[in-house]
Image (cartoon, rainbow, N blue to C red; front, side, top):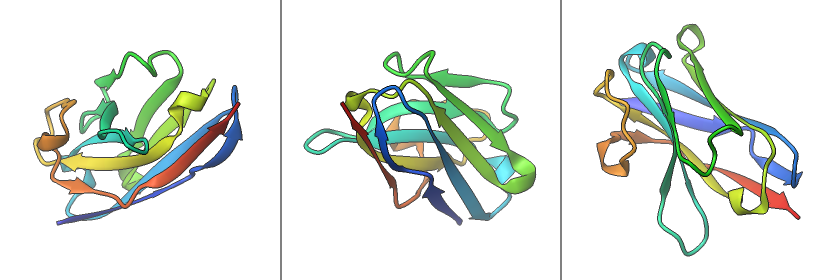
Length: 125
């Protein structure tokens, strides 16, 4: 069992930056692949970024590539999402998720076993 808690969301103007954090407790964090997803009102939850257990491989949605950076610190049981050049269309609730297949870099909601409660990101124009 893994418990995930996100933080770092807020209100920011277009062009600004935020850094989201997700702290994990429970089973060894380094045994999980981690993902970030987001969900805007009236839309399905969508993939944002993923990182494997070692941090050596990452993946990004085309819509955030070049603006967002995912990283992890296994010693701190934490995964981060640095978001730069934010746009109003980035407004959503952002969720971190843990995949027990620690070598997989998954883009699919269905592949993740544990989810945080989400943190709201609002980008004003």
